[in-house]
Image (cartoon, rainbow, N blue to C red; front, side, top):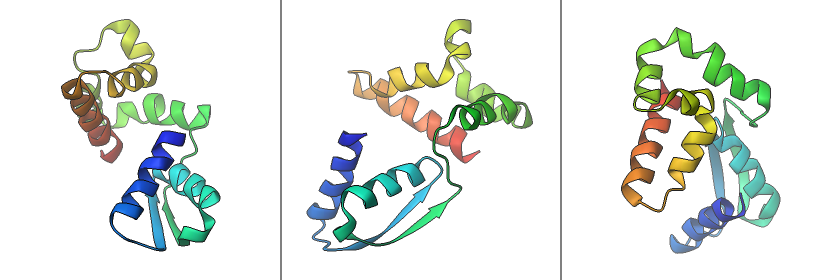
Length: 118
């Protein structure tokens, strides 16, 4: 997570912002909380929507319980994945968004975002 927090701080510095209101949605709430904890002097407040801390029960809910309610969206999300990859979908996606190929990273980041926003 350290590199993500460094990215957030770089955005703040690059834009010349001294302090700011940090907004986080879903897993972004975890990032927002971690950033506020690491850089409290830079954060004037937090807006956290749909807090998700990544606990196993939350992951199961998102990728097992909810998936049948949005079958078209979930099918697009898992399209092209093998059966073992589908059984470990979060690990598979994490691997893909860390792929050395920028095209692979972008494609899977886009697909993951589309699923998250479904």
